[in-house]
Amino acid sequence: MLIRNVAVIAHVDHGKTTLVDQMLRQAGIFRPHQVVEERVMDSDPLERERGITILAKNTAIHWGEVKINIVDTPGHADFGGEVERILRMVDGVLLLVDAAEGPMPQTRFVTRKALELGLLPIVVLNKADRADARLEEVHDEVLELFLEEEAGQAQLDAPFLYASAREGWATRDLATARAWSRREEGSGSASGRRQPPVGDLRPLFEAILQHLPPPPGNPDGPFQMLVSTLDFSPYVGRIAIGRIERGKVRVGDRVALLPLGPPGPVPPDEGVPEGRVLKLYEFQGLERLELEEAAAGDIVALAGVEGVEIGVTLTHPLHRDRLRGIAVEEPTLSVEFGVNTSPFAGREGKFVTSRHLRERLFRELERNLALRVEEKDSPDTFTVSGRGELHLGVLMEVMRREGYEFQVSRPQVITRIGSGGEREEPWEEVVLEVPEGSVGVVMEGLGGRGAKLEDLRMVGRGRARFRFRAPTRGLFGYRSEFLGATRGEGILHHRFLEYGPWAGPLPGREKGVLVADREGTAVAYALFHLQERGTLFVEPGEPVYQGMIVGEHVRRGDLDVNVCREKKATNIRTTASDEAIRLEPPRRLTVELALEFMEEDELLEVTPRSLRLRKRELDPGKRRKAAKDRP
Image (cartoon, rainbow, N blue to C red):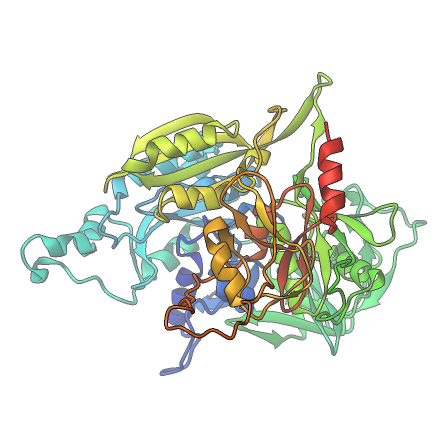
């Protein structure tokens, strides 16, 4: 069988999953008139809610006599662990770049990983039908990116296509792409625009077949496969997914599981576990089809090997050659997970004990390679390290939906000692696009957080694009400040860049918080009179407890407030005695917003139904005393 293995890589929201949808449709995967949801590959509820790909997924189509295995990868650098292990399964990549925005931080990240592995790219300038598309400029920017990342000659010769994933067309001719662009509609009449052949991705499929190599491997040699990802079935247990590097495998074959270690032959006297292949699957569209046999080059899923993990090698029992494992960059942020200790502990969660928490966190390590979990001296607390706030926030969101209840601390950057003995911390590349009138306030805001301006350019439409180099610590809590400064019109992206020198003390949150001074139920009358003091996080009828944060103060410093105060009843009735109570909608916190907002002396309480911020020390008297003793 002729095979091509390709991964689709891109920055967030550059149309990666939409393109895969169109490839599936045009390859005849769906039946005529079949109703199919948009972004069908984003099957997880959390992915559909957030509009981003979190977990890499496999699919496959047939184009002529060739089977094309396609892997849809995450676009956010926080899920780089998914990208790094998935790229080991493929021989080439479709690099999607927005024809208006050009290469963005995550574009650089995923491109670097693909080029380092020697994968051949096919560049697709997507959204070429946008009115503000910059086809020639973005073409040059992608080539500059390849040069900066030291691409090889074969990689620099990558073909470029211009496409609209939404309309389902692609072309290799720049003039044709211009003629099909919506920009032509404004020049007189719509009839002057050449209509694109909606539903024609043939140039893209042809580029995959012509420019990407077939997978290497000897189908006649002994079986060998690297496990790149895992799945689970309640019927057959853990399922190993990867590309067969050599040989063939059949249902019923015995295979050896070589644990992580240096590549090369494993000595015969070293005992390794073995298992029998109970089920073998190939990917076809959105389904898995059972197989009796698969050969080198194909991406398959097999079940029956107990204890299989990501990065291990499955081989023929008599030919135990270990492949190079999957290297993932180290995490840069850590938080402390702990058993919920608030007055409302145990009311809403199904799994609330330290045993439940420990089992769930260590189970996550089996498939989340970029995560680290360490046990603390206290049996109720665990240090969890990840690639960024989104990486950790998604884990928390998944756990709360599964019924877990816990509390977490403010994220801390993971520092290290440099070669010269100096302290180093993670730095990030920050790209912002803002209206021209917001340039000054953005530069002032990031400058005060230790950021250094690398580039500033106008991108048309009255907008400016910045590129900063900033310490990760300096970005804590900045997103909400940024959205306020740009009136919600700004776009902010960042990715881990490198470890750099310690930036020294940085300012924290500028405003204080409103803290409930007693347990009870929030009352509309009390909240109405507190609105002028800040932005509220609670609404009438919501239970609160002493030490719980109920809003953001308009000034520096914390303020203890009574949100349970009711209006005094009197026996005097007049037409002017009652005020009309009109409350502004409360600010609803998400996990990521709460992690950014928190300070050192605060915790986030996470339950299946609620997210509550609280002070570590609930008693206001003890908090004031601790503040006085603090130097």
